[in-house]
Image (cartoon, rainbow, N blue to C red; front, side, top):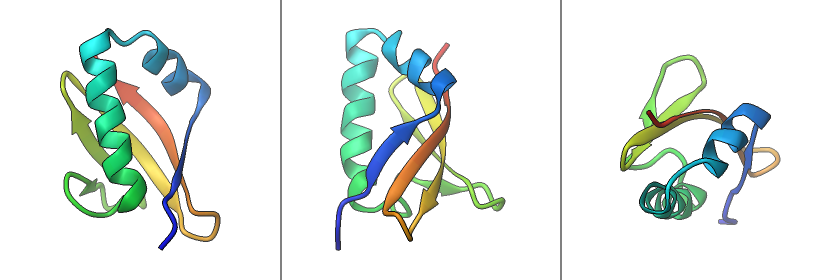
Length: 79
């Protein structure tokens, strides 16, 4: 199975860019796991075709395109 590419919508990309180093490292580790299986742990189904997964100090919400093998991050929350 191919690894999924991960794309961020503008607002989520801006929030990702503003993360501090420890949060960014945790998010990058999460991205590696999700790229191999966006439906496995630690992903949680939101029952509306979107999924969520947490990283240290935040979480992302995303949708998956199996046809294009892409994970589209539609929100990133990190207070």
